Length: 416
Image (cartoon, rainbow, N blue to C red; front, top):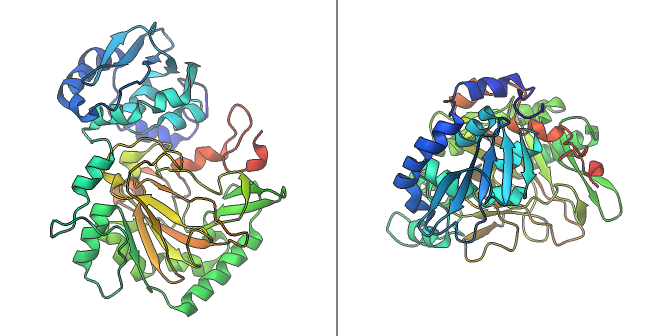
């Protein structure tokens, strides 16, 4: 990425940004934001208690600080009170307001600079700012308890799984409410064996620094591949499976216009769980799939996961925060969930899982030294996504670029 205030060096990203309203930095803070606070400030509901002030500054020195109040927040000119001060271009700030850029994405791609304070200090404010600007509530256990309700008005059975014989209405109702879905025995043993063989062919052909894969390091110092994107580079079988009608049927429970992303957003991909990873992104913390940015461009985004192996705590599995896809959310580390509705998906080979990209999810380290779970993912998105994001591209492409310290998110050997 280029320096602050310049283009991103990804022309299609700049074209997307240009198609959204440009928020004048001073006018937004003096006029628009106070009105938004008056209208939506109640949605923060005490979330900012204890938050240190946050300020944004342009290169010309224009600066505004966000200060937590008993009711919500206020904005003042200058930065003398700000613990965290972010320098950003006017276009970059507008992208933040438009949800095209998140704090992590802004800093890691050089589109914002921390003059003082920390990235955590900025991220602490993200849910409340999103609530104020978008009108979305902040995800809490109280909201989950109140809204994770089935069609009969009873608490949703968060561990429920379904079969291919269940009605689409039942599947859709659960999926829309919970943000995830587990359907048993969608694929035959023969199909799973063939898909698994193709995945192993892809693994054998994948190399570090190929620009399409993620690598971690285990405790022996061995570099292991944990994610392979665009599997169609090696396998016509996995490419063709993108258009299996069963995938489309279940993904389109979230919308009839959803299309498989067979040639963009990483295409057909596989996650591979390895035991004893000590460095790298093999065991992801709580995250959403638009964590770098691009929410209005990519979402709703559906991840359809074809389970090739047993998924459990020992072999590796997916955990989700039920119902979180509807809300603004805090960034969490594992162990910080408190009483939020954490659901661990235990699955068997041949099962299909689906989850919204905006459902907070994590993949903890497997407990077994023999772990090796593999899951094939096929993404589905609306036509707008295909209009904005070109073939072969993804917002996450920036993760393959070295940051100012030479670190590449997809290659753990580049980390200090």
